[in-house]
Image 1 (cartoon, rainbow, N blue to C red):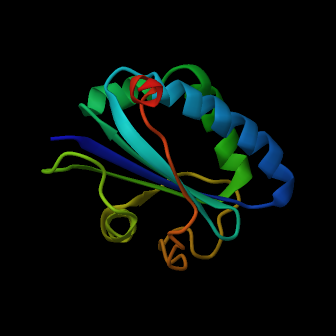
Image 2: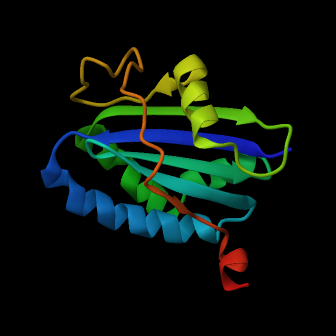
Image 3: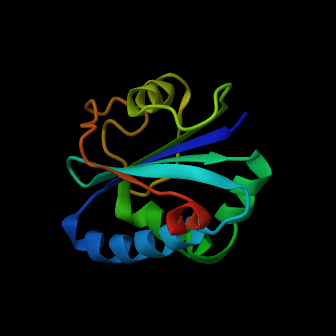
Amino acid sequence: MPFISVTRLRIRSIRFLPAFALHAVRTARQVRGAPGYRGGAILRDRDWTFWTLTAWDRIESMRGYMGAGAHRAAMPHLQHWCDEASVVHWDRDEAGLPAWPEADKRMRDSGRTSRVRHPSPRHDTLSYRPPRFGGTSALPPAAAAKS
């Protein structure tokens, strides 16, 4: 039974995209080699919005990744760069990743907002536009990527 984590980040200005992209590349490299990481995907949505969908052996594996390395270095910047940020977690009965529509539904139904310094009017209510599911990229574990 994998532990699923979904994040949604909306960058509030194009001027933050280069720094965000640099941190995103570093955290993607880190997650692919993280202990307990089963796989994931990234969704590039409209309006500089980015989703991550990751599966873990257990919550402790995800927390270890979050509190170390590139991910830990990126986290403080998100409060300033984003005007919308949210996360949702759950234990999944089936193996593998859920589909993006399920991730969106879970975010709307039971997601929680993250602290941002300049929230949009939609931030607190998670009343964002429906995502476009076409811009997705797989994020396999490093061992699977070498196969």
